Image 1 (cartoon, rainbow, N blue to C red):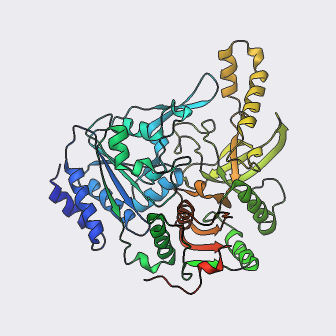
Image 2: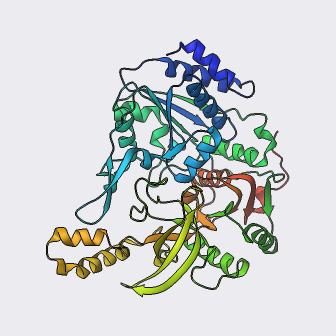
Image 3: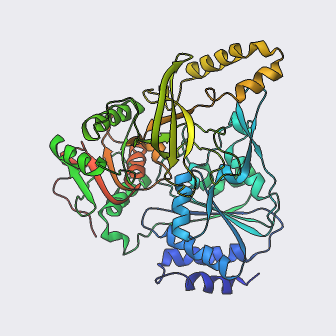
Length: 476
């Protein structure tokens, strides 16, 4: 293992430009963290706002490991985030679930995860978009939390390193006020694990050429100040204010005619997303059927039935983006609408298209997936269907292998909610200003910051107050 000074020289050597003071301090902290042979767990937290160079830093860390043939494993909470991480570093990345767990079906027919053994020693685990990792108990994880299991897995051998990377201005996990995985206090006080953290605040000179990042920085400052003051946007370049419905129609036609997999729109609710999705399908894509070949969709519930564990994806995760290749045999059963389909997943080009059964009832639901009542109804009908098998064990076995019970739940992905967009990137992102009866707030600014920073090429702001754009320019 190298000395901290030599590791720092390597890290800086792989930086493509002279690091800012902010970045240089982080490189020195990382050099120390990576150069210590550990006998006790310790976490390194790297927080960085949009445009501060987190991605460049990760490339440097991975390059140093490759140079010295040190083991490194890259992970992210979602498939799309793992793809972004892999593309940025030139190194394979997997979802956290794919890395940590093996699926198992419980006696009640529900799919659960079993934490796998970690064979790695002296290995650096890097988790991007770590702000999405929750501490809420999850029945599918054996009533553990994802963060709890991540720590147990990584530090099964104390010689391993864990670097958690995330943006503190983004939305926290659903149902949590803050992102625990980005808090050294949480690790020290709740987990008994020391953690070193560093926050990149200085936006790089290259990033200041982007209006997306200029305006994201403005929102970040409001978030840090815990302010509800009205924002002041500077439109131009890669950020456009959409002024009326005619302009929005033109933008929709540009983005959603033909292949639109690189584009999305972010709204506040599933109800609004459903409305826009149907409008785009009917008026732009001229699709009159409930679902058609060529439709783009997002998986809204984990599914372990249609892919073998040995496949590239391992299982079909909540949040995966796919495309309908063909549709067959629409039919009603058990009070739901189903169809047979051939689907492909855009973030896994090496994964062959697969045949599945889709449960279309989730398409129109105002909840994130099938409601609890709908899921219970389907389960009860399945139990009744196989009651002739006698013993509970045989009934459960039949239910868990029934393709209708395991039908893939999806929603159209032309327009999605902000929480569904987290961890992903699209070339063009349309953001609709939501109804704010109490005016703007810091949590709204986190929502807006998260939505805007999903775009790599262009952001379109729809329905935002004119006063938020008037007369004031941001300092460059």
